[in-house]
Length: 121
Image (cartoon, helix red, strand yellow):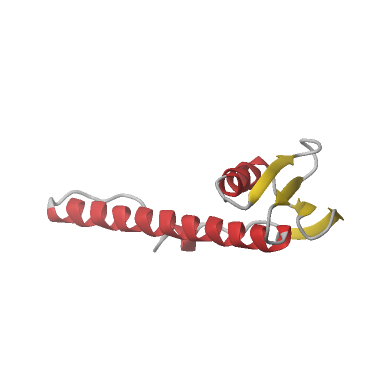
């Protein structure tokens, strides 16, 4: 059983709203049911994207499960750059999960070879 199979599903899915737009190259996005975890990850990935001239995010209030992301680009549209960054976040998460699952499997095999209980499920 992989880690992904043992993690219960979260609550409501994330909703993405496009708020204020200043042409195609600048927009404010609101991600509902998200917080600093995805906010800082997206901010970092977007800040490393050459076509991004500005990126920032805020969580309006700790009791609200939403995050605002401001994105300004030079060249491609802000929406397409955000779409690419979300794909990168997904790819990084999938890689981390696969690497972790492989390490857990390797550990369990080593424990079984040594005759020790592997523990866990």
